[in-house]
Length: 173
Image 1 (tube, rainbow, N blue to C red):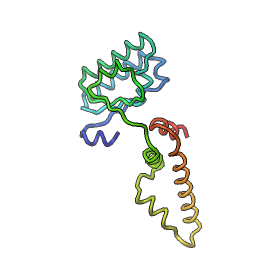
Image 2 (cartoon, one colour):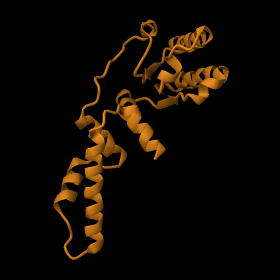
Image 3 (cartoon, helix red, strand yellow):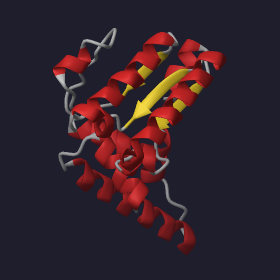
Image 4 (cartoon, rainbow, N blue to C red):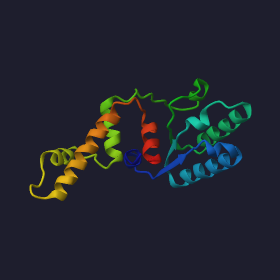
């Protein structure tokens, strides 16, 4: 997300739609409208996370709310990214561009897990795997813990999970 904002030299405004927020759809619609107007004022890039909750068809009344919000995004001429793994084909026509990403392979999942554990620097991982301080039981214990963490990440990477599932697991832990 930060990379996108940095490339466009605009602030980033993230909107997360949870399943709970759908219980009061009227408040959700007004909240999103307010945030979209802020984004237009700030010339911000909007990322709508977990858009599946909102975009999935849940009846005619809900579809009206979806259309109202999408019109709000169109009228404010904002740049927005809607993160969704499934979407109604009819709704896709409302977006200027749709990018389909392939499923994550084990290497991509490993990178996500490493990032969540703050191990996104490959050089540091290699250094930690190759160097231990002899005669220091604290350093040896840290090295052993680090090796166990890397082994666990390797095991986790084998599971067919998408990025959102990995994020949710980390947030829930």
